Image 1 (spheres, rainbow, N blue to C red):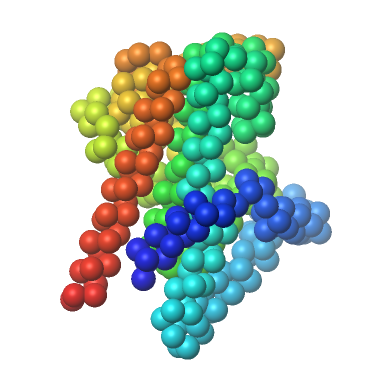
Image 2 (image 1 turned 180 degrees about the vertical axis):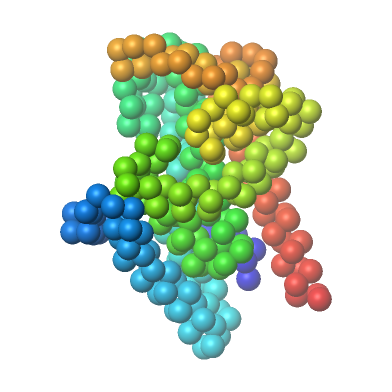
Length: 304
C-alpha cells in the first residue's frame, strides 16, 4: 500500500499542485503561534508541553483514522494515505521555482532570477551575481527536496500517515520555534526532536544523491567537508550533492548588505543555469530510486 499511496499522491500533485503555503499550512502556523503565546514561559518544559499540545492530537487523528478505515477496507485506508501525503509531501514545490530561476538565467534576466529567488527563499538576493543565484537556488532546492519529499517519505514508509505528519509537523515547529541551534529554552525541545527525526533521513538522502551521481566524489566531499557546516542537514546533503554534481556549493556570498562566509561543499565547476538543470535531474533520479526500492519492498511483503 505504501508504494501505491506514494504513486497516487505523486500523480495527484501533477494534476492538482498544492499551493506552497496553503490553508492547512497557514492554520498549523497560526495554531502553533497561539499555543506559544499561551504556554511560553521561557522554560524547556514549556516547549515540551507545547510541542505535545500541537502535534499529539494530529498524530492521534492520522494514526487512529488510518486504522479505523483499514477495518472498513483497504481502499478507504489507501485514500486516507493519499490525502495525508498530499498535505505533507511536496514533490514539486522545489522544481517549479528552480525551473523559473533557470529560465531567467538562461534568458540573461538576472533581476528576474533574483526576484524569484527572494520570493522562494524569503531572503534578500539583490546583491547576488548570476552564479551565486544558481548556487543558492541549488542549495535551497536540494534541502527543500529533502525536507518536503525524501524525509517525509522515509517516515511515511516507517510509520504510515502518522510518520509523515510527525516529520512535517516537527519540521515546521522547529522552524517556527527555533532551528539551527539558535533556539531559546522554549524552542529547544522542538529543535532537538527535529534533529533526531532528521538524522537518518538526511543520510539516506545523501547516500541516494551519491548513488545517482558521481559516487566517489560525493563520498569524498561528504567525508572531508561536512564537518565545516553547523547545520546537520546541510552539512551532509550539500557536501554529497556537490560532489555528485561536480559543482561547488556553499562558499561566501553577498547577502543583506555584507559578505556571508560559508564553508565550501562539493567540488568542480561553478554553479550556473546548466548546474540547476543537473541538480533537478539528480533529485528526480533519486526519487525514482526511492520509489523503485519501495516497490521492491512492497512486492516482497505481498509475496512473503
